[in-house]
Amino acid sequence: MKEALTEIKGNAYLPARQRVRWMREEHKADWSIITDIVELDFVAGYAIVRATVSDKDGRIIATARRRLSSSELPLRRYRISVICSR
Image (cartoon, rainbow, N blue to C red; front, side):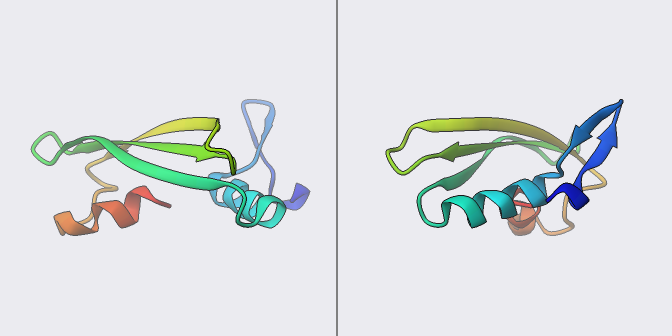
């Protein structure tokens, strides 16, 4: 995974795609990721998505939020969940 690290503002950063891969390799079926659309506004052109990582006992290990701008939103509304789960 070290080869996937990126430097952002002087700190090592592992992109979300690689973090998910690491979690799946290390914890297989023990942990889960649930994504929720917290706010969705097609008129204003944004969505806020929350991801929650839980262990096998249902304890929350981590949460994260991301705001998607209109340029990241799909043309068809039903595809928003695909974009949000990246």
